[in-house]
Length: 307
Image 1 (cartoon, rainbow, N blue to C red):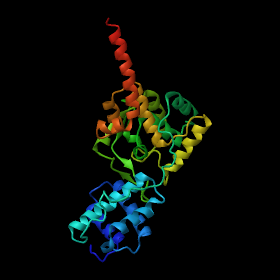
Image 2: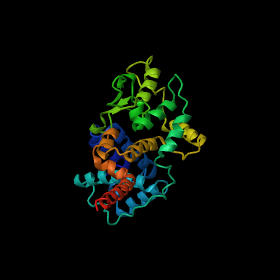
Image 3: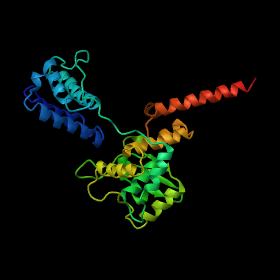
Image 4: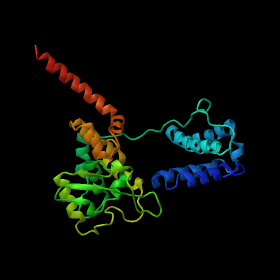
């Protein structure tokens, strides 16, 4: 890695040296995407020519077509490589001081609702087409009932189900974003877990997987796209006239319904495969605050009865 390299060439060498094999494949893929953006936005920018002005212009160009959070991820990736470039004396000054960099990003687009309420979920599940063969409606049912991540559900095989104990073992994912899709590790160590399912769901899945290869993914038939499943879910939502939600929104729905039902934050965190309760608390703060308000009402009611 030298001063004479283009910035995108330096970044590619840097991520290969420091990130490949040190981070999960799905995380490394994000660095690859950042590199692709660099090639497109600054094909001739030399590492030695990086300055506050050239770096800010690079960020400005990226911000034109990306939301704020995506912009921040892009900035943090580049900044990490630049810090190493300074330590290696490839750069003499830091072009990325936080005090001077202007944080931009396009106005956030209107996102789908994060979760459904209990009545909307019931309407959705009644609309599912659950025949005797695997289809995406079974996938939607599974995530609604378990809160699994998209890649976790794709990675499930018949061998992962213990129908007698009504348990699903989560110890891998399916790397659906790769052209050479295959099994991949879970997001973190906490994501390796066992998830209890209700007897009705257990019976349904015992029927559809009984003749499938035990160690092959249940839902994977060729290349899988997140949009395919989201489109099917959107169709179902429109049919029953409920808010259109994403597959990931079903994970939020699952967790929210459990919290409203009185399940502890600790239990929900373990079920979702969160590394700690803080992640769960931050993600579902709106639900937790609402439940705390209800608890306060109960406390006051109880105390009033003591007189």
